[in-house]
Image (cartoon, rainbow, N blue to C red; front, side, top):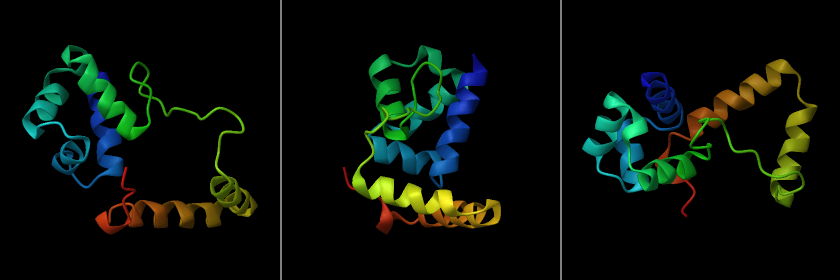
Length: 112
């Protein structure tokens, strides 16, 4: 199904400047990932698809975000969410835009 491949590519490009950069981050050869995205991810090896989805924190079947179990957020995440919930629509939009911008800067990537 090309729809799933297109959806996965869209998710990657929302979070990374390029498919190449994402492939490097996840440790998959760029050509392998591009081929899977072009020819359909349903033919991709499960281990590789799972690694891609783990890195993106999405479910490998639905390609939807994996939701942490209730109460599993860290204290820092809870604090940030509490502040975010206080914002109106305009404030949330500004925070979202800033997070998207700053997430494109490699110096701010989480080292895992």
